[in-house]
Image (cartoon, rainbow over all chains, first blue to last red; front, side, top):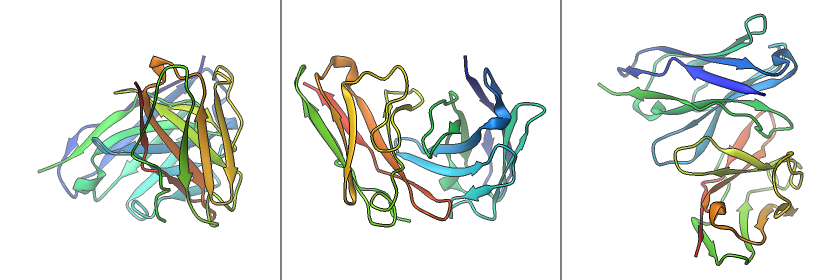
Length: 117
Length: 110
């Protein structure tokens, strides 16, 4: 069955950097768009970035554009999110998920990123 | 990109039906048939309930249905059950690669 496992969440100071990973299994990873979605504590869902199966199409929410970089390694069935210049309002649980016709069917359990001094 | 508008709360008794609205604009909900609905129970990852306005992923009961009229999409839950109590979020494609979510609706089963 489909499994998505995020890792890399941590406590980081404002202005710092962090790299999240998402290990995928149970499906043909390279065939699927993948997305990062985050949820601040007690708040709603916010899309962050998504990438096509081959990596040639990439999109970012305005809130992270220029600071975050999404990438994937299809040989390793892995998705990444490099986060730089982190701010307090980036504090959230970050989920990776598959993306199919702009709906996310399969989700990981999430990884918590806390940005605080 | 402004968030889609959802009522903060909705409720219904077991067995009843409840409808949750999701209002956007002609640039998102009204402009594309890419509206999705998610159910999120406390401290869990969201679960896709509806995609492309009205399609159900395998395993989602047909008690859950989606529709759209103009700039407003709706999720209807029929035959309410206790474990339907959760937060529900809508999302839509908004053009130029953008997505947008609603603020969420807390559904209470009375």
